[in-house]
Image (cartoon, protein in one colour):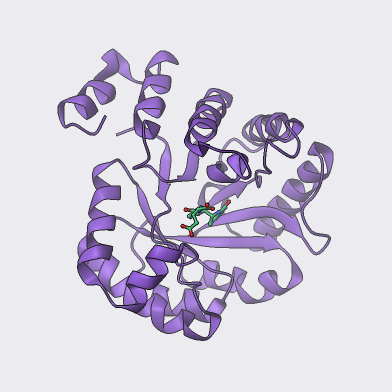
Length: 267
Ligand code: THG
């Protein structure tokens, strides 16, 4: 469909209901979630098995086997635990597979970056390092530049990297939205082969009726050139907002994608 990477976020064991069903080994529930997300335009299925650190590897194995049978889509392995990432990658490493995530932190450079190389995957790079999350735009841009140097040193081409500029809640500081937009523009201007990626829902943390914030933010970011997002793409109006925005930006010739999504009752 569109040229926007849509990483569907629902298979995430930090969510209570998901965690409970997965620990019950409820196959139908998980398969249904995968199918629903795929039907609604997902390009990747994110798997986060971080419900209980002591069970993460076994849960990652169970989920990866199940998800990879339920869909042909590549998986986004969402973990800071290299053992869990490796366990998943050994089961399913299709073209387009993503390691979510690497950072500029020493420990991740030592433990996770080698997996990106060994398994020849894509990776989401979070703009943080051992000093934490940079507070403002300039500091974030410095972290982006450092991560790009790190990729070049390791011969990882930038078209495998999805730079995640880490969204902060609008309720704590509306300037964060401007930083995210400026960050996306900076990346596309300076590193045109690199992708941009945002975990959208952090923006609405702490406010009611979060979907409105998430959807509006998505539209603003698409306008800024964002080419990937981690979202609940099944959430009310999310896919419709994306397709309408792309059509109005002239990125959907004759509104073909929009019309086809309507005909198939996705929107
Ligand atoms: N960037 C990258 N990866 C990420 C994130 C990111 N992975 C995790 C997260 N952020 C994106 N995924 C989710 C998955 C589920 C929910 C939010 C983000 C979610 N949260 C509800 C809440 O916060 O209220 C529900 C909690 C519950 O059900 O218990 O559903 O930014 N690279």
